[in-house]
Length: 94
Figure 1: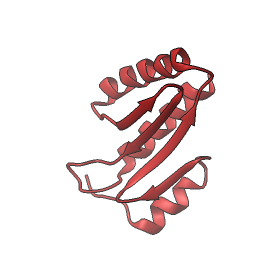
Figure 2: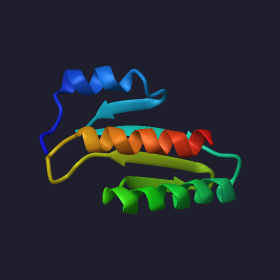
Figure 3: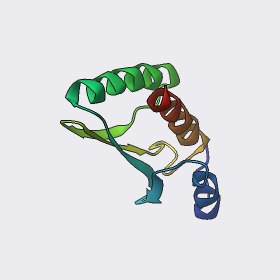
Figure 4: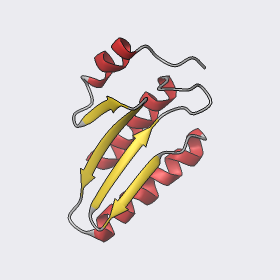
């Protein structure tokens, strides 16, 4: 799998509100009502990660969750990262 070019990444991010591209990954920061809601979202995202065999770098403190996606084997952002970002968005908006 080949990494996407920076311009293509930026163009594709236009449909993902709150996502940015830097340091060779796409990132988002999410805020939930409380820790329980954040943890529930993380659990749902974890099941998607396993299904895709693609795992995020993430950081959680109380009701805040930061997620970074990059395909390490490819050395950058790939279609796989955008597929996962789309699934994350579906989980968060449900």
